[in-house]
Length: 86
Image: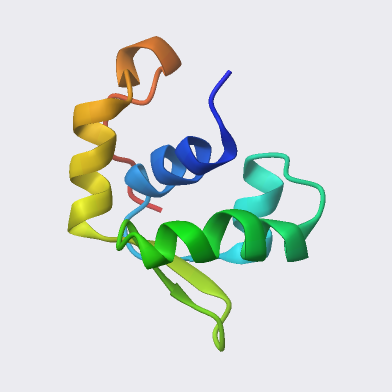
């Protein structure tokens, strides 16, 4: 099972553009959206893996985050080997 950080990064890797935080929470089955923001999104934003716009409440994968997914997450194992346009 992937940690929440990797679930976020992999999901965003398959999305063209930004994703609303609530939709992201639903997609990775993270029940507490406030905790997702504070415990997952803010730390990976500080690591420059995502752009987190707290005013618009949307998240976008950064180029560094895409590289992290490609180099550190086995996409074949989780069936996310291609980008999906939404």
